[in-house]
Length: 158
Image 1 (spheres, rainbow, N blue to C red):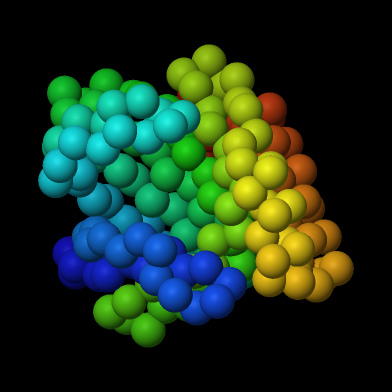
Image 2 (image 1 turned 60 degrees about the vertical axis):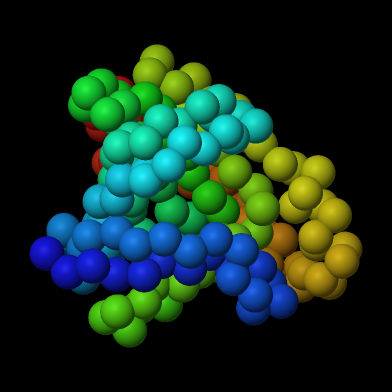
């Protein structure tokens, strides 16, 4: 396994979040990483994420979203968290993506909630998102909700 740095960027190119994860699978357009939280995180939608919570991270190099599957430190499934983002770039050491602030959380029963629509709209105005970026973001959201409903990979574990 190889340790890779993952950077979540804003449209301005600035790093918003950065972490390390292990590349565990790479095939065609899909990269799968596994990471673990090293400290407690208080998240407004996810609540408290404890240290050693595992994150299985799915990045498609040609899709406008990524999917995180979280497991508690004891291995129990916690939830999915999906980011709407521009397709990532990967140079073998660093994976980067531009986060478009539109998110989706999925619980153990496959129920989902769209998050941060106000942030998306605010940043769409602030950074003058093109019509194409807005269209691609909402197409990605539609694709993700269909995948959840049909229990398609990686939601086939629900």
